[in-house]
Image 1 (cartoon, rainbow, N blue to C red):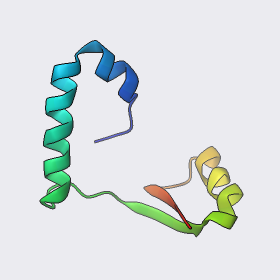
Image 2 (image 1 turned 180 degrees about the vertical axis):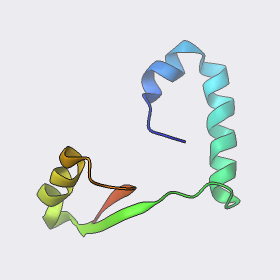
Image 3 (image 1 turned 60 degrees about the vertical axis):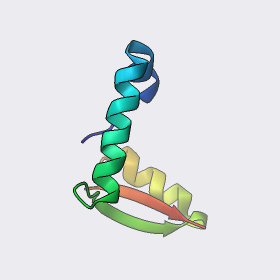
Image 4 (image 1 turned 120 degrees about the horizontal axis):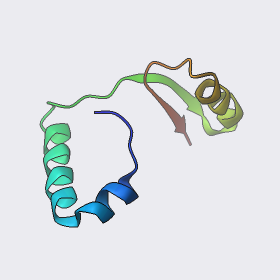
Length: 66
């Protein structure tokens, strides 16, 4: 699974979007879908997180922690 625009997808076919989101949520809760985490940064380092995104150097999600 990759990133995409939920708004356009949902607007195109709301019922199919609902079914597919339910399926994706099931995959996540049963462990069949895992995400890669590139970095966990404190919220105070939000600027560093933005730099990683802008550089496109991350190999997974960047999490900002409270």
